[in-house]
Each structure stands twice: as structure tokens, then as C-alpha cells.
Image 1 (tube, one colour):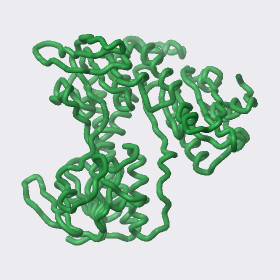
Image 2 (spheres, rainbow, N blue to C red; image 1 turned 30 degrees about the vertical axis):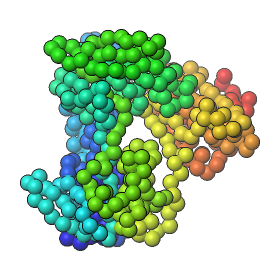
Image 3 (cartoon, rainbow, N blue to C red; image 1 turned 180 degrees about the vertical axis):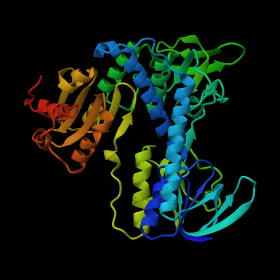
Image 4 (cartoon, rainbow, N blue to C red; image 1 turned 60 degrees about the horizontal axis):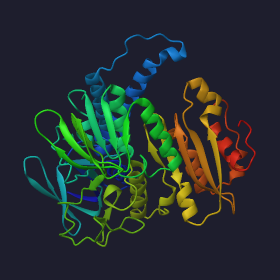
Length: 463
């Protein structure tokens, strides 16, 4: 019952930590109380992308005539779409099982809790407790939907993102509270299915963390698609009784509007799973509700580490995975560099897609940079025109002092597949002219990156 490494949680932080530890010669065990793969594979990233793909296919069918194809009476089979999504998630979870077996990783089913120096107590479904020991313990317990007192979730009519993935019928109407990536993606999906959707956002724009021009473009696209959007607004209370829910919303004028809906989806962020995992027993230091760690994810207790949504930083799957590798390689004595949190890409998989990295225009100016901005619209892209996807643009922000890339902001088809080039450009400190002189294939959406860089220096060809 002794291991070199025990990981509590098997999400994109936990399972990556386990596999990397095994690759580096450690004996590894993973403690998991639910499905392997955690929230991301089972209730987040993967199943939502499956739903969004179904919505995209439906939209293609509805607009098939634009491509010279006749399709009549294309309608969504909601139950089949949900079933496909669950099937995709199940397949991915089984893939983690395979990887664990391949790397000789032991899976311990149950709830894991730190109990003393280098020990983990696991309580299984029957309530039986077993003690395991390890030289190193990585906490990767993830997060859950954040609960607001004025929007009390009952899991049936007032729901979080998890229930939104498995509704037993397509609701006629839905109010989505919060327009971050989760809220915007689910608002887009249910609207595409035929649900009447109202999206409520407290900030002045939807997707408030994105560059303002990008957020406004998505707002226009949503309204064009039939999604009602209220910004500078907040849900004050939800009245539940027979019939539709009555939702009291304070609008931008400070007035209360009453809206009715069959479902209210709360998508106002996440809460880290830090309860009942032994933090208090070991006096592990916390900071603003999350575990305090150093650059290599060490807590103040020797041999205990924490990664992912329970530490500070963007609550993103790819961040958790990167932290896992950094943490475990440091444990193994492999040279590794701390993660640069200023160079983390963010993606939202609506239609149009959104992707960004680095500083937006407002933050670049706030930081005191003199900047050069280049924009290239997809209306000028041959590939976008051929694909029937002219919505959106590429916006690049450069430091005028040395021509390096401060930020990249994209909205349009497939931009989530294009942002990695910009992450690499920032990592290697590529200049605008490095990007301009990098030959991009034609015709592709990625040409817009080269053209946007050229636009910042008055060298653009196609606009």
C-alpha cells in the first residue's frame, strides 16, 4: 500500500500527473470517487464539444441551400444528441483506463483525504476506509458549479452546467445566467436546438474577459441567431412554483424586469473542491479560498502538492495538465521551468469560435505600452468565403518598441485551432515581421494571421 506518488483526482490535471510520474519511473496510484477523466472528460470540455458539433451540423443542414445542397425538414433529435455526447464522454473515460493500465497505474476507487504525514485515507462506496502511503501526494480535486444564494440550484429546473448536459427533454425556454465560456456555449447550443434563450450578463459585454471588439462581434452573432442578450444586468431572484419559473432581473437602467422560463441555467463560475480533503488537518495554507503553492506546486507541507482548479490561475483543462507535468517533473528532479501564466490561450467553442492569448487592447494600454494593432476580417479571406464563414476577424496587438506580440484575439470559424501559433510566437518572442515573413498556406483561415500582422505595419495585401 506504499507508492512513490498518489494523485487525488483523475481530471486533466490528475491523470496527466499520474501518467507523467509513471513515465519517470515512479510507482503511482490515483484516487477517484467518480468517473476517470474528471469533470472535463465526463461533464465539461468533451461532452459540451460533442453537443456543439451536433448544433453545428444542424445549422449546416438548415443552410445547406447556401451551398447548393437540398435538405428538407432537418430537425434535431434531442435525445440522440445527448446520447451521442454521453457516448463520446464514456469513450474518452475508457481511454484513461487504457492509459492507466498501459502505464501500470493503480486506480483506487473512493474519496481521498489527507490524514497525516504522507498518508491518504480512502473511503469507498461501502464506507470502508483504507490507508495508503506515498512519498509525494498531488491534490487535483478540481471544481464544481458555483452556487449563488439568489439562484438556488435544485438540479431540475434551476441547474448548473452538469445537469444541462443531460436534460431528459429539450426545454421550450431557458435563461442562462453568466456569459463566460460555459454560459455562452450552452446558450448557443440550446438556441440551435430551438429553445428560446435569454443570456444575462452582469458586465457590459458578453464574454467579458475577451477583447471588447471580439465580445461585441459575438454579441451581434448571438442576436442574429435569435439569442436575447441582456448586459449590465443581474438576476436578483428566481420564483419557483407551478408553471414557468419567474426570474427577476435588474436591467442596465436599474429597473426590475420579470422574465419567465422553463429552465434557469446558472453559469457564473466554479467553486474549488477543497472541502473534506484534509487541508485543515495538515494545516495546509490557503489563499483566497484556494491552496497556496509555489512555482512548482509545493504546498507548505513537505510532500504535498496541489494543481488545477484548486490553486490560483486560469481554471482551464490545459492549464491543469501543464501544471501536472511541471509539478511531477520537478518531483522527479527533471529540469523544468515554471509556467508563464501570461501566455495561456483561452477558447470558447460557440459559432463563431473565440480564441485569445496575452493582453487585450485595453489592458495593453493600461500597462503603458505604445502599441500597433493589425486587424484582418474574414470577409477578405478566400477560404472563409468558400466555407461560408465570413463572420469575424483576427486582431493582433504588438509592442511598438520592439515589435513583439503582446496579444492575439480571434473570432471566427476554426480559430481555436489557430491560436497555438500565437502562443508559440509569444513564447519565442517572435516579432511582427517574423509572422509576416512566415509563409502561410493558401487558401486557409490561418492566412489571416499573417495578414493581420502585415496590417499593423501597413504591409497588408488583401484589404
